[in-house]
Amino acid sequence: MKISSFSQFLAKRPPQCKCFLIYGNNENLVYFREKVLLNQLKKTIPSLQVHPLEEFILPEAPSLSLFEAEPSSIVYLYRRASDRLLKEIEKGLTQDQNYYIFASPQLTSKSKLVDFALKHPSVAAIPSYTTEEAEITKVIHDFCQEMSLNFPQEAKKILFENLMTNPITFESQLQKAALFYPEDSSNFSDTDFKSLFVSKEEGDLFKMKDAFFKGDVAAFTQLWNILKKDDFQDIALIRFLQAEAFRSLKGPGNGPYQARPPLTPLQVSTLLSLLLTLETTLKWQADLPDNYLLQKLLQWLPAKSLETR
Image 1 (cartoon, rainbow, N blue to C red):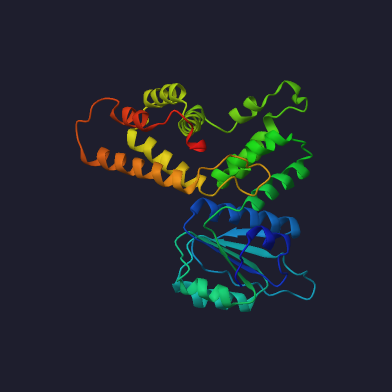
Image 2: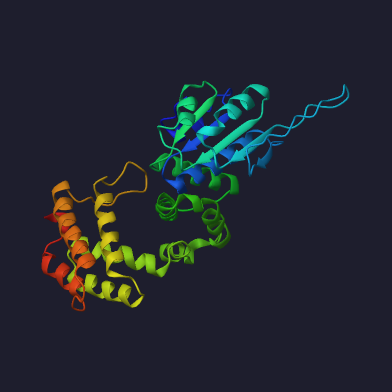
């Protein structure tokens, strides 16, 4: 069966669904969903045993005597699923009532195994390309509820944005928040909370981007030079600005914590044209003057903000 929304699937997971195929080219998201799904199964079935498999070889189920209770359910985890395992997986589904989670970033929508999962009524085919805001919101909500944590809205926003960027770290990040966020948070600022998750270099990158989009020449120049001192390469900075320009096309988002103003498609098109030209120049022209890239960006940077042009 095809799963269009992972968060909705978690909220109403069909009881007959015993096998889950998580695929797509977003590796972080694939393994994040594997963990989230496994955690949900363990909460639903406290006696569930977890068996990671190096090879897809299922042990024979032992026969029970008249006096033995039914064995605990098992969830088998396998991360190297491919089309050649199709027959073995079909056989496993018909033989027992255990659970199977296959997490494979290598599988594509054209895979025979994916096609099988899409058509099978008890197999969930979960494509993983773009992180859903709802699934991150739910993970944060469930964790706070389970740990009896009462994070303020701004702290949840910081957590949300951090996990949207890198969802695979959700367990360590949430545990870190619970460990370091004090019960008496009156003296614990938003900056203190953000510092738990965002490195100085990462923070400087986003500050540089914000200054560039706002047309703040002085701040942009200062932050650019700081990043260069931290050994950031010109090509990496250009590609970061490209990625942020593409992200702005999505708008502020529908989530409860995303309210950043977007650039218009025309603004993004103009900006990307400049950045791609500069990237090509960096690749193919040797011995460019010092600060060549910075000077080109400053020449193009308007006095007014990109956001208001």
